[in-house]
Image (cartoon, rainbow, N blue to C red; front, side):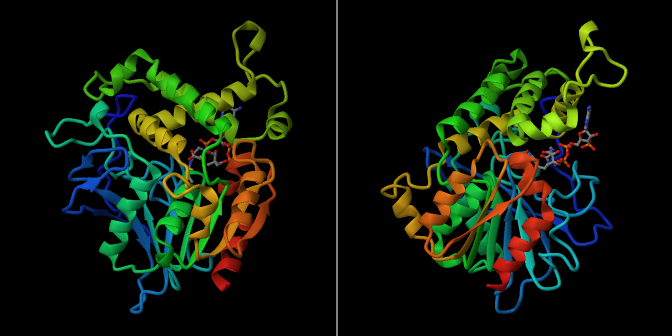
Length: 379
Ligand SMILES: CC(=O)SCCNC(=O)CCNC(=O)[C@H](O)C(C)(C)COP(=O)(O)OP(=O)(O)OC[C@H]1O[C@@H](n2cnc3c(N)ncnc32)[C@H](O)[C@@H]1OP(=O)(O)O
Ligand SMILES: N[C@@H](CCO)C(=O)O
């Protein structure tokens, strides 16, 4: 099976020998998953990694939920089956905020993703890639799959559920849907429902992918290598990446400088152009366009208040000790959205992460996030 670049998908990577703290496992429930938008998903799997050991009384389990293009590899180096190094390496490990000596840390790859969990690039019931037949998912469906994983692992109640961005949506959904199973909650750089601005940015990214002739209606997996919608996926990433960073940061880092050795006036690139090209190329090498579209749709549909008499009512269900974090320069999920979340959840505390990096601040400012989690875990 190939990705949108025509390269083999990194879906079958086994646990790497020598990984100091983690291993990847698969949860394959026997029951199909009924979906909120209709239909069922038969025979799915959730890839996950764990660090540490579940305490006999089950009190030390921590669920870490990744963002749009993240994966189960929260910590540790890149390697076979892990195209990127751990995205929160500064937070998980000996002496860190989430120390495996104390906590049993679980990180699943999201349902619909492409890093081990079932998604559009996975084989469907007939053995062929799901492609366009892969059903539309919601954040609620993804959390439902994760509750199955929690049952499988013997985790009745999470000591902490934490996530940023799309991971923050899932963390919030967990605390609203399963309040008795979430003792502490950390929602970072997210909101209770996707805003018009977020929907528009995401829809534009989806359009970039689906208008690439290589998309083939979502059924490009048997195209010859290199013939998938990698151009469209790269444009989607360029758009997304700019929303993840801040304007002052780009000005300070790149200004109008040309990329070394290139002249923008003669067909060369500005340094900032080369920077977004680089991030596009990197994502295209490690991510599947079909997953990007399905996950982006789920984010756009997210509204914690849907079917629950509105956001205020939904947030009232949360019983977890809650910390909401936002990044002061986040132009995609502005602070006002996290403030509203913190106001709506009983007893929740609001923390502001100071960063030049915009939305990506929740990934970059690991020291501040570590402090936030350490404080919450001490509560
Ligand atoms: C929670 C999650 O699930 S998120 C998933 C995790 N990973 C990703 O999303 C990967 C995409 N990257 C990102 O989102 C961000 O880069 C982060 C948050 C991971 C890291 O942010 P930062 O440390 O600030 O990195 P920054 O945005 O400056 O990018 C650095 C890269 O740009 C490259 N770069 C910088 N300037 C230029 C330039 N002018 N031309 C080309 N490349 C450039 C660097 O060489 C570096 O490359 P590398 O990442 O291949 O080593
Ligand atoms: N850089 C992150 C940000 C999304 O919130 C990602 O790609 O998942």
